[in-house]
Image 1 (cartoon, chains in turn purple, blue):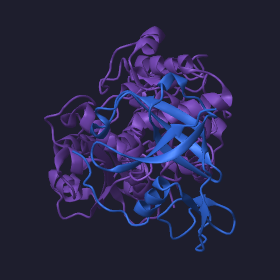
Image 2 (cartoon, chains in turn blue, orange):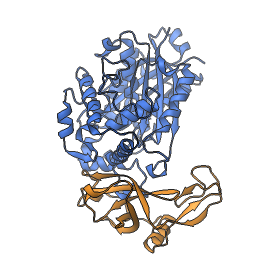
Image 3 (tube, chains in turn cyan, yellow):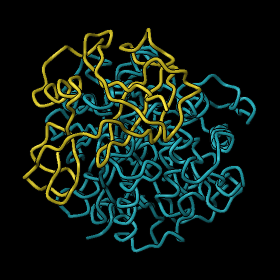
Length: 389
Length: 130
């Protein structure tokens, strides 16, 4: 079994596009990925599609066939994956498995989300339903509220405060500056972050990702297909892992650690046969600044409690030893929920191939990681991407 | 848009019990606590679950003051939501009648049941005076 190759990638602009349907957003990203691969849609064996809140945002369930027909291949097998913010991460995990085992040769995997047409209150409600309705939502838990509960537990366990989180936001905004697909191509200061209105204490507006419309897609091909059809696909998915945790925070032993990420990472690193020291850079799920801290610790890049100061100390900035979220992350690039997991893999691919505006930052890199999380990391996927030898 | 008001067998009875001051949790033979409705222990999968009395008060583990609510809580923000530990289980509740700045981890809370603006019942906490 050879690792699948990434033959092409595509993104829409991430931002405020309330008039655009998810089927149209996805078609733009997927057709761009096919063009990047130099393949026609008729080459696709199967499609894997992530979407979270289509029923709420567009009164539209059963979106799989819609997105296949948007590419002109309505007869193909297509499945919609819903795992909250990890929807396309789990879609990617399954697509990788199908290609790796040789069951299929060409897969299109991606996701799309339309959110801004709901407005802030509607989108807040849409995101909240990733939590436990009986035990959390009724008690007033919002998506930012859930991460605020984790942030306060983290500070209680390890010390620190929100001023260190502000450096994560500043770093990711700086990284997004040259990224033409990013929602916020502007820098912010620590002071601006700290003075912004509170969303759910201790998290303020600049601790939170924005509400985003957008889509992303990748074309995966088997090693054999790439060789036979002379497909230029220098990046492989050498490891994939997925793991879970209880849906409600109240049912977890610790609120300052995300074991689903650790378990997914262990599986992905084992499959790729790498240790954590091999990772040159990572795109991690920073839906909130505290989430980036939790992610880099659970990925093994930092010991528990040591990740909080990483951005402040310049270790995860573009000039640092292990740059994190060179795309701008969810924080500044944006978070169209169902599109985020595959967009991270798109960005790692572009960074490794050398055609990302931040590629020069990691010019010698051979190994990048994409980490996607759903809810309060009740779902997690980790993918290792490497430049094939 | 709010969720329709529906009945939730197992959970409704549990809320009734909390409201009556007779709260309970479920316990498997290994001592893992959980909340209804459950047919298997979420930790170990054990099928035999016994009702145990919920401790009368819990202790706040973590809390947040929510400023941007969902439409269900539109008239209530800012409000405090907390997770509190009651022996082997933890509950998430809305703190009522409390100055948000006075809430702290370790405080004792009493579980109660209240009605939301949307007519759905919900777990609430009251700070127990020291």
